[in-house]
Amino acid sequence: SRGGTLQITKDSFLATSAGYLLKPLVHIPTNVTAFNISPDGKLSVQTSTNDQPLEIGQLELAHFANAGGLKAMNGGVYTQTDASGSAIYGKPGATGLGLINQGALENSNVSMVDEMVTLLVELKSGASVG
Image (tube, rainbow, N blue to C red):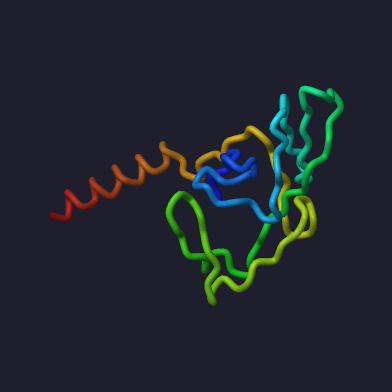
C-alpha cells in the first residue's frame, strides 16, 4: 500500500486503511495509550498499565525487481504480476529498502508550475498551428 494510513481492526489487528491485515500480523493491546513505529519498522506501544515502551512487532517492506510491473488495485494497493516479479521482503533500512517515517506525508513528484508552463507552451504552439 502507498497510502500509509493504518487502522486497528475490531479484532485488534493492525491493518491498512482499506482493511488489509499487515503481514506478519500485529496484535494491538486494548489498553494502548501511545503507539510508535521506528524508522527500522519496530512497533512499540505504551499501555495504561505500563509507561515503558513495549515492542509488539516488526514491520517489513517489500520491493520488486520491476516495480513498474505491479498492478494497481483500489485504494493505493498494488499486487505483483509476472512482469513485477515476486516480492522481496526485508526490514526497513536493509539493502534496497527505505526507512519508515511515522506521521509523514509523501510529497508530490509533480511540479505544478512546470506542468502549467508546459501546458501553456503546448496550447500556444497548438493554437498557432491550427
